[in-house]
Length: 171
Ligand SMILES: CC(C)(COP(=O)(O)OP(=O)(O)OC[C@H]1O[C@@H](n2cnc3c(N)ncnc32)[C@H](O)[C@@H]1OP(=O)(O)O)[C@@H](O)C(=O)NCCC(=O)NCCS
Image (cartoon, rainbow, N blue to C red; front, top):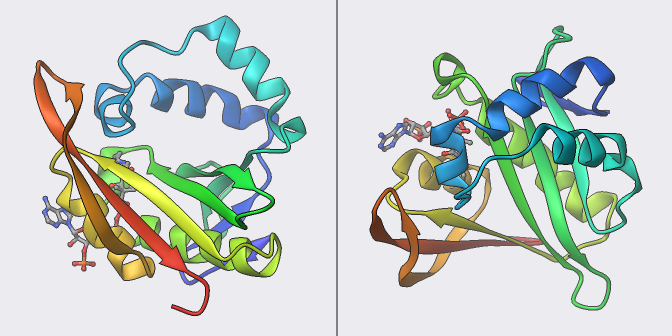
């Protein structure tokens, strides 16, 4: 559906479900999303079956070019019809697949979709704690740091900052 240098964004298919369910309960990934409780199998099944029907959210599978197996997923959430804004997030599921530019390529494609297909003008995201890889990845995709919410979250037994990043259509 959208193809970059390394990955493509496309529709989720049934066989992606077990990958997403595993990643949504991975301790590193849940911490990076500010989550503090597991995703139940029943809740996940309901969400997965209805994923294409939620008007406020679009979720893509991220696949390496030429591969069927997903390497991650990308979500566009909180789509606001009046402000023309949304939030976006990406996960590269397996640790050994991180740091190869897949996340950055996916975020570039996701931003292009926000501008060209959704007619949005502003996209934001939140980073929990000290996650330099995420900040670097998003900066390379066109996001800038807009501020820090000091000690705004509680993760892993301590208070951590939330870094706010944003991207504007046209840079
Ligand atoms: C964060 C994430 C989406 C980034 O995707 P990715 O494919 O690994 O990232 P990329 O390879 O595109 O870019 C990573 C950048 O961070 C840099 N980096 C990696 N580890 C780093 C570290 N410990 N400190 C500083 N920079 C680091 C890389 O060098 C690269 O930057 P560069 O290309 O300018 O050199 C992915 O690693 C991930 O899903 N991680 C687990 C969950 C998570 O942290 N999600 C973020 C939620 S906000």
